[in-house]
Image (cartoon, rainbow, N blue to C red; front, side, top):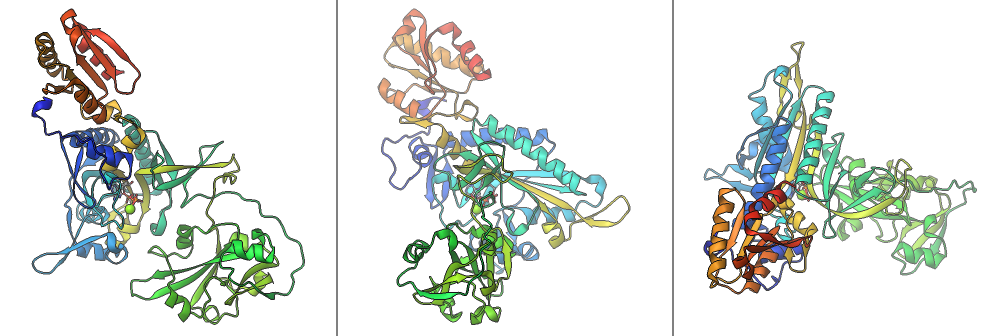
Amino acid sequence: MRFSKSFIKTYKEVPKDAETVSHKLMLRASMIKQLTRGVYTYLPLGLRVLQKIEKITREEMNRIGAQEVLMPVLQPADLWKESKRWFSYGPELMRLNDRNARDFVLGPTHEEVITDIFRNTVTSYKELPLNIYQIQNKFRDEKRPRFGLMRGREFIMKDAYSFHIGQKSLDEEYNNVKGAYYKIFERCGLNFRAVEADTGSIGGSESHEFMVLASSGEDDILYSNASDYAANVEKATSIIEIKEDNSEELEKELKETPDCKTIEEVSSYLNVPQEKTVKALLLKEILESGENKYFIAMIRGDLDINEVKVKNLVNATLELEMMNESDVENLGLKAGYISGLKDIESIKNGKVKVIADETVIKLKNFVAGANIEGYHYINTNVSDLHIDYVGDIRTARAGDKSPRDEGTLEIARGIEVGHIFKLGKKYSEALGAKVLNDKGIANEVLMGCYGIGISRVSAAAIEQNNDDFGIIWPKSIAPYLVDLILVNSKDEVAFEVSEKLYKEMLSNDIEVIYDDRDEKAGFKFKDADLIGFPLKVIVGKGAKDGIVEIKHRDGSKNLEVKIEDVISYIKEFERS
Ligand code: ATP
Ligand code: MG
């Protein structure tokens, strides 16, 4: 491509509403253009990057025997009603009507469609296992679309779905895909980690997220400094010290705690360590019917509640929300002074369910809210509470012991670029996807699903590879490998040499952009660094002596090369 003819328009100014490095650089380097919030055009350079990521993804998916299809974006709501996700997916689902007022959705993911295809196509176990994938635009009406391609409302995903008879077959395929994902992200030049992830309401047995390590990431990852344990903080567990308390249980006693809303205030006012207090969170689940289920979740005062764990413990389908003021009032609760006391009316009559973290039931003679404005009890005991659920609802923290007691947990931020999941029978049961087994009996199949955020990968790669001047593309996904720069277009010798080199590069299948523009050298160099081509081949004054300069964008090398050696140098670099 000749730069002079290209549809590339770079910008010096940092765009106003772009917060992350990748978003800023993608806009400045002419990779993407926003159409509306969370919706982007991929400009020629950005598209080339995506196509490379897609190519790597296809190669590795094909290698494990997955087969590519392309399913419709537009999907009838009936399928989503069958799976019940029409009701549970919430406002992220883009819904629309056709001219006959029938409900449709724009696919955020394709479990329903693929399962429908499967149930109408596959009849026998002999046709399994199967792994079907596609690369396609997905639609999600995200609450906070942001960071450019990182969280779009329309974005590109590779989604794969596998079908099995028997857990063993699903387990094997899950591992195959996991292996393929390692290769894909390695080949994309990313520094990443696979972490254990929450399986959520689907309740599948296993799930991993692939996290690109970057400070701008939206997820917290906890990992052991002494083993391979790594998990999303939503899922992570840890070991903390819980001392056995053999003291005698005392009678609870009401104490005034004026204006003490936080556990820190209560603990310092009563001069009791936070470890001898209990704090509570007031949560609700809004059901399909529009009714609410209410929960009081309690944990030892010095620890924090993990709402994802609470959601799983109570088997909620939708994310839990905080109770609002009127909920609290209707239930006769006093916000800031709550605990699961058994004599509270709405607890007694079961309107509110009480959840206790494992740490709570080990406590004795602790401080807990009295459900009276401005009061707590001291010397509360478990026997004073009504507890419906006990479980691990604690947020693991950096510094805690790793769950298998191998080392200490450390924390890092990650960008989720891939997610693999053992779905089990969720969709095959809901949609009746069965095959005959070897005894002629119809059985629901087991399924796995596997996503990669193709467009997000391009942004994540920039988050990890940039400097003050611009992007430093890993060579495997760079829009062009080489930027051939003619320093001075009036220099006839240099002009001849660069024209010749350009043609030679093309005939050698080298991906080259040729900066033949009638611009100052500095201007061209700035663009080259901003866009981040791995190599600059600079044709300047040395051309008359048969010499050009080659600069590596990552700063590793900067050398003079004889013109006749340029092609082999680039070929060598490409292979290395
Ligand atoms: P997140 O927690 O970031 O919203 P998710 O759990 O909703 O992700 P999945 O449903 O597992 O994501 O989708 C598969 C992959 O698609 C994700 O791993 C991510 O890389 C990508 N992805 C999801 N949502 C978006 C989005 N709004 N914009 C760009 N990529 C996305
Ligand atoms: Mg999401």
